[in-house]
Amino acid sequence: MQRLSHWINNQAVNTDEPTLEDINPVNGEILASVPLAGQNTVNQAVACAVDAQQRWAKEPVHKRAQVMFNLRALIKQHHDELVQLISVDNGKTLADAKGELQRGLEVVEYACGAPELLKGEHSRLVASDIDSWSEFHPLGVVLGITPFNFPAMVPLWMIPMALICGNAFILKPSEKVPLAATRLAELLAEAGLPAGIFNIVHGGRDTAEALIDHKDIKAVSFVGSTAAAKAIYQRAAAAGKRVQALGGAKNHAVIMPDADLENAASTLIGAAFGGTGQRCMAISVAVCVGDETADRLIEHLLPKMDELKLSAEENQQADMGPLIDQVAVTRVNSILSQAKEQGAELVCDGRQYAALPDKGCFVGPSLVDKVSASMSCYEQEIFGPVLSLVRVKELDDAIALTNAHMYGNGACIFTESGAAANRFSNTVEAGMVGVNVPLPVPMAFHSFGGWKQSLFGDLHAYGPDGVRFYTKRKTVTQRWLKQTGHSTAFGQL
Ligand code: NAD
Image 1 (cartoon, rainbow, N blue to C red):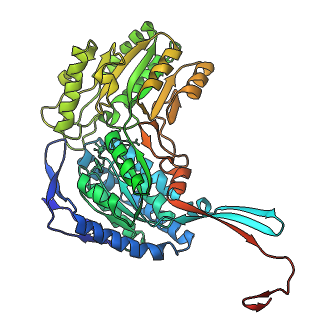
Image 2 (image 1 turned 30 degrees about the horizontal axis):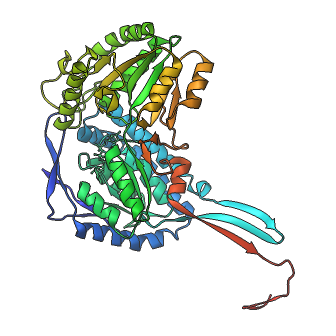
Image 3 (image 1 turned 180 degrees about the vertical axis):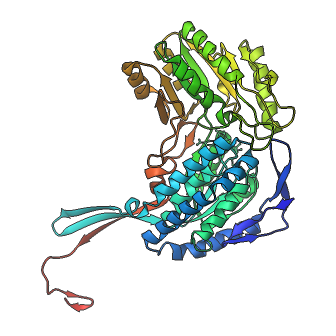
């Protein structure tokens, strides 16, 4: 079994720290043992990053961009290998792994525009003889802590943006899926990134906390569960650090009576069950306006759910992979039991799904009807292949229900009515909104983030907000007298 190394100063660093097992959720195979970094490794990585960052910040911006051009080429060159690694480590299907890598690559491509992104703002003649401009300076060494569900994409939301802004970066990947990050580190080195600018420190919560607390870490980007996001936000902010902490979600899709239900059902299948529901942008609640809409939607959904293939073998072509581990299986199964006890109707019970593989961390696609706001399957983020269906009378009821939920990552509406779509997108309390689009994940040149308990902090991930997050602004106001011939410290000009 492979023992993973930390990555510090463009080198694999081995330690005798305790380890955790990284397990393939398809078959329980142990893929690697993951070291849990202690204070010494944390100090070593941060010290090395502090030293290297001072030189990196002085590199011309087009040279920093050039590393991103090279990285883009290398990711494309090693595309299949990276996809395979993501799929094996996380259990997701090859199609999902390809989609994830593509979305990560788009942030690398955005970062290639570093000279444009960082050129600042200039105002001529803000007063007589006075010009003023704003510059964007790097923060120093910044930290990223990432979740299990996107082993490559979420690190790539952060790394390119932080690096082009002149920072050094330390990644603490999810201890459940550490493999892709290590390969990205090697590719960054091959792309020409100087030693010490990108480092990986493996570990779990204790390691993350030691990194957050380190005095030389200037900012923290976090993506993961809301409980951790909130704790990290409070911890880092109390120490005066900049922090963006993206948390959990419960994304609602409102289905209007005039919606094209065949289209809505097809896209909901992908949005609710793709990635086995382990996506922060998964649609986990369908809010149907009118009983007839709900009944008809179910008629469209059920045959499509029956056709979903679960992959019982590594990397097989399939529609759904396993959940990340047995803990997740137990949690999803127990929420399904509670839903029934609390009066919901299990139209399709994933625990008894016909094509359920007999090994691995699988739960089949589940559809729960007649869900109400007080049920645990509605209140909690399930993070599994469960679509809850809530029936309401009017669009305003659907909006009020969505807005009352603690999470506000994404929300969407399916309708043929421009007026309904407008009303929804103007009033729904979510950071990302879709109209006849189930997963409104912003492109790399916009920014990604939710509202309410789905994001703690002010700036969203990647895109223009990414540049703002990873830089501090300096505004210079300069006056040069028009007359020549005045004396200066350097003599007569
Ligand atoms: P998690 O919160 O358990 O772990 C995420 C990372 O944080 C891991 O690296 C883990 O080691 C570390 N960690 C956990 N608790 C910590 C703590 N108290 N202090 C410091 N570090 C801590 O999340 P997960 O189970 O890996 O990922 C699933 C969650 O991530 C879901 O809730 C999902 O909605 C969320 N997520 C959100 C987004 C988004 O953009 N909003 C994107 C992807 C995933």
